[in-house]
Length: 173
Image (cartoon, rainbow, N blue to C red):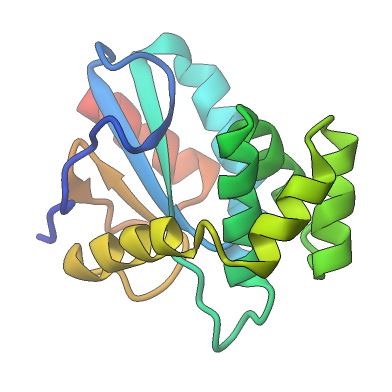
């Protein structure tokens, strides 16, 4: 069974408390249709389990199949630099059909971010190295497609639908 490498740490984007008995990690791609379909299920599952699960998101943009995925990941990191990673994460999945650079900057503006700073950072690829770190960690962890989930550091081998994921999290609890 594939293990998460590196383990969850302070550099990760997390929801929930580090004291939660279960940690769920998703390697995702904002342009991936499977990730887009998993997004509402995942939100539902996280609501069901409440504070018992810490959720972690790591970038795994599949740029060959999804030409906007890399920039979407970089804009999420630009939002993180201004304290709004999760708001941008949600918006990118909710508006997955519109991920061109001008859309990404418009989303930054909608979220009250410094949109010109986001535009400059996107053009200069300021956050590309951070996205690459996640991608490399995914490769080391055996990730080849998205979404890919890990529960308490072990790869979740079953489908990522709400019912299956919720059952796996309940077993882990």
